[in-house]
Length: 243
Image (cartoon, rainbow, N blue to C red; front, side, top):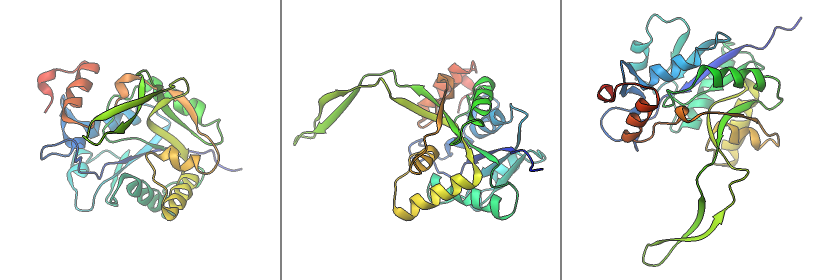
């Protein structure tokens, strides 16, 4: 009898956070009494079905290993690539080649800088996503009015027309796919020079659309320094504890 597919987290955390500013990469910034990375990883482990979380870090980065030392459910892999997509692919290939995950096991790829993931959203993602052939991702409907623009000779940004938002969603993470399918899809895209903005983009090029599971505002991604304070407020953490 074939074994049931298992669930694993994969967190690419090898970036330098160029847009974040400062000397500390955003994943290691403090949010309350824990780093952003610790909160993001621990959020993935809120569902007991997630057996282990693999954190992909840059070669020579020992910070993450020190943070999770002694936790057998978290393992750091120093195979981070030039871009996020390379880190995800490097991690997947290492896990598959060393039989640490099976080809049909589910991989939940989660941003290192999304510490506000709720247990409810994670549960819904796993419950519904495992029944869908292409996997699933968290996303929220686009609420703002969107404008298509052009740039004038003077450098001014000019609104050309309004983009209908009825069918537009802003992707979040985790994004959950079969390990081998995601690895093959990303590799194919990189080979063809397809620009990937998230993991679902790779799966979509195979002609199968992942299921969208409603996310939530607290699961916003920290990109700039000010986002830390916004997330702290959303999570009910003391503002003075953010640095």
